[in-house]
Amino acid sequence: MSTEVRDDNPYSRLMALKRMGVVQNYENIRKFTVLIVGVGGIGSVVAEMLTRCGIGKLILYDYDRVELANMNRMFYLPTHEGLAKVEAAKISLININPDVEIETHNENICTIENYEKFNQRILNGSLTGGRVDLVLSCVDNYAARMTINKSCNNLNQLWFESGVSENAMSGHIQQLIPGELACFACAPPLVVANDGDENEIKRDGVCAASLPTTMGIIAGFLSQTVLKFLLQFGEVSPFLGYNAFSDFFPKYPLTPNPDCTDKKCKELQQYYNDHPEERRLKEEKK
Ligand code: ATP
Ligand code: ZN
Image: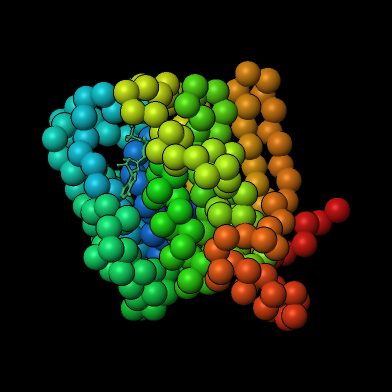
């Protein structure tokens, strides 16, 4: 039997990452603010993981309420039924770790009024009243992704996007650095590129499949990537995919499109071509 004294503080296991040389300054985690749009199947689990890791502050956006139909995913409980997702999330997250500051917005980010406020929260939402450290897209529709894309291009804000396919058998996470990596408008879905109706992408009345497994895996990928990005360890992939049928994990860079329809994306592409020394994207180790 081990005679080692057990330390019941959950942070001691996290601090071991520092002792073992994985992370230089784990305690920095408490200074960071992450803004998450969408606390559904992926976003709620990311919020929980970052809360358990001791993140400083989370800003949560979601316009929806918890339904019993959400129980095939992680995080929410039947007792949360009818509550705004952001409120239900706040209750659970504070219970898990009261040291984390949780700010909630039960809003649609796509309306004109909310969009302006959303931009202000990116710029002023951190623990010190400055810019947040990261924006995460965990939404399930094209319009919301395009809204986040517009904000982040205009504010030159680094963000990560995530998603799971309609048949629940694949998913991805993507890093977006305005001007350096492809933005969401650089490679629009085919129907939009062909001047089709973007609403066709999310088909009304078609019930998408969902699995807690696939969503949990993508949430794990995204949370791990956030930790690596904020605490600066390992490599942060520009794009990481997951195919559940074949256990295939494609990973590749996504270069920006010089003919992107987003003016700000093009401007920033030009800027970082002229100022390569200011680029934030780290070269992958061979
Ligand atoms: P389903 O539609 O499959 O029943 P869902 O709506 O919970 O599930 P998820 O993929 O689990 O979808 O989560 C995506 C989350 O993103 C949802 O909680 C949704 O409310 C939120 N969301 C989508 N668009 C916006 C938006 N414009 N503003 C705020 N939150 C959004
Ligand atoms: Zn672009």
